[in-house]
Length: 154
Image 1 (cartoon, rainbow, N blue to C red):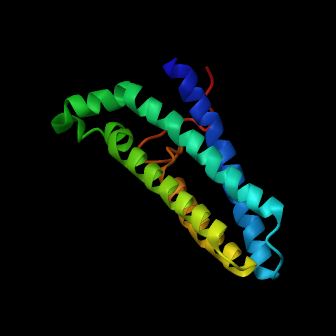
Image 2: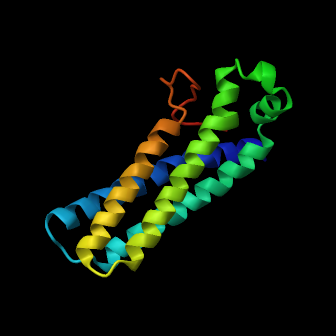
């Protein structure tokens, strides 16, 4: 079960990034060219947040089942020297949780704004901040803290 959820988490990461980048693109164009906040813009805002929440739930399942995290928390004094354990035990989890909170707040605030310009601007700012945090917290293959493959296979 752990390996299946790990693969799903890896796949959905790309879905989250795709939706987030496309949502940012749509709101940037809408804000820049003073367009109307359409039903499609609202749908992308909503689905971006929903997919991110699904990813968070998968991540939480992984967090509590991960042998790396279990090892980190069972022996933190020696594990603190292991970058991989620190990354997954603290950094990845905390930053991704913060990113989802930022994304959720931005989505909720944008939904409640009265003008189209405010909706675009609110979504743009909050989603860009969430994207920045997510990009920092992803275990890229070139990361000095924790290197993982771009695509994970069973």
